[in-house]
Length: 114
Length: 114
Image (cartoon, rainbow over all chains, first blue to last red; front, side):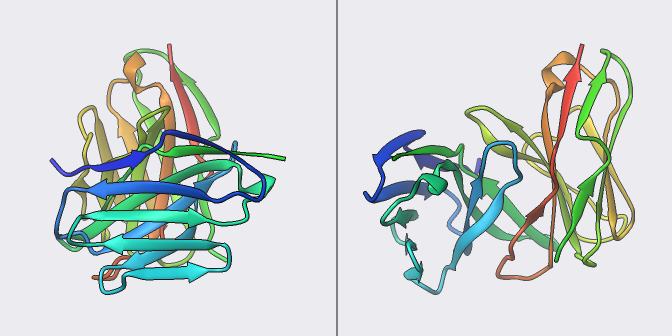
């Protein structure tokens, strides 16, 4: 069946360093790839997304790249700060019947050490 | 500002009980989703709905049913609760769109089945 694999499951970096989280997906019909951040005890919130007609998107310290041929997309966080510590989920979505279906990765717990 | 609310933050039920989890959104979103979140497994889709009275199975629908009688409300029903349904349940909503859209999550309901 369809799945999204996310690596690593845990990532620890020093404040100011970069963090990279990678995801692969299996469904070639996927055309929307959001990233969500979930802080401890809180609900997931969208931080950046990319659609299949774009290869890269950047928003301040966060960037996402997409390689549709390889079915691979990545989240890059530069100049990490302690408040970036959270669980990050990648996801892949495709049109399904009247709406769209989203498959999430298992999540990456990011620790940023001050 | 989108608001997604869930009927309970914490719920304790006994094995065999019928359990209702309710979700309400106030932004006139067409799509609504129910996920369960377990450590190391990410967010797994149980059911979703793209219109009133319409529903689609997600990846793990067994043991669950849903109801969408009004556009703003999406209910998850555990017909006969079992201990393996102990989990965090998250509801989400989004606008409809062929290219996919941000999902807005509720605060979650932590269900314990004894």
